[in-house]
Amino acid sequence: MTVKINENYLLLESNYIFIEINQRVEKYQKENPDAEIIRMGIGDVTRPLPKAVTNKFTEAVNEMGKADTFHGYGPEQGYDFLIETIIKGDYEPRGIKLSNEEVFVSDGAKCDTGNIQEIFDLENIVAVTDPVYPVYVDSNVMAGRTGPMEEGGRYQNLVYIPCTEDNDFIPELPKTPVDLIYLCYPNNPTGTALTKEQLSVWVNYAKKNNSIILFDAAYEAYIREDNIPHSIYEIEGAREVAIEFRSFSKNAGFTGTRCAYTVVPKEVMGYDNEGHPHSLNSLWNRRQTTKFNGVSYPVQVAASAVYSPEGQKEINESVDYYMKNASIIRESLRALGLSIYGGINSPYIWIKTPGDMDSWQFFDLLLNEAHVVGTPGIGFGPSGEGYLRLTAFNTLKNTKEAMDRISNLSI
Ligand SMILES: *Cc1c(COP(=O)(O)O)cnc(C)c1O
Image (cartoon, rainbow, N blue to C red; front, side, top):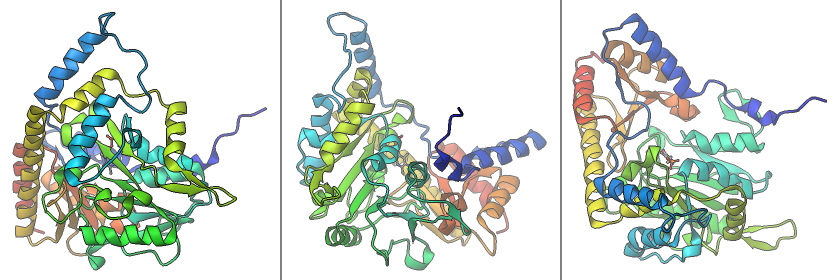
């Protein structure tokens, strides 16, 4: 007997973008050992956890070491103390009512956005914006929902919704019917956002076509403009058609600590073969209780400290810090005459490559001439060709230095 693999894995694009970037950077560094390379590619934060968070985190760790305050398995969905804090802190101020059973605490929005497709039939047609956060695509490839990749870099059965300069990065409704729609706003990688009116178009589409929107709001904390919705549930009717993903990674520095949550309103329904409705909330609950055993108690205590007055003050300072970097990047590149997008309601700046350069050529130019590492837009999908992403997550000092170097290039 031989063990057969899940062959869908063979359909995945082999050269994962960040591996290729690292190889090019390592090669350059080896040949130029004195070059001080500044990384503005990978979307990881650099500011430490807030004091308010580490204090509570430490207390909770100490509780775990004493018999009378020790915590074993907790509820798979998360502790009520955190869920209630989330609802009060993130939703009630925006006029959104949620019950505790509608919020599922997890160890990451990456896991949740990757796992959510499990509760849907393989026959569903999936739509993604292009360029896109790769997790949505790859998790559907692994499940066998996409078929092979075709020439042009698109998977056969996926519907791609191009977001480029041509449409101001506002996704247009698909011309053929789709069932599941992944939307990430503020967007990674383009850094652009949707207004309430623009997001309403999608909620109305989903209601009319019985589609479901999987809304990734990981960058909610970076929203600066008033007319940008922080939650999809600010849009009327969204409770019936949308699942929302949130994370403590980008607002509170939890990328290495791991805590996030997913909202599945009880009204969102999927249908069986006989056409009977089933609550996606109960399917997701079943999935989580079977395959997940909850986030550790100290981490959930730490996450709830994000909502304390001290915690809020500290996370706002961090987000402001990154957004100052973003505005420095925007201003410097503008002054060079480059076309740039994002960086106003998000920590990402999406740059149109100058002249006829493609994404990798511009990447190599910045690496070789300025020792600055960005992310080639092509790595996020075919419509990312001709763009490059910079992040605002580096230090202020490095960001300024990188912009000085780029400003001295002749582009
Ligand atoms: C960083 C990021 C997340 C957060 O992922 P975690 O697993 O919670 O760290 C989710 N979605 C997008 C688009 C992101 O860029």
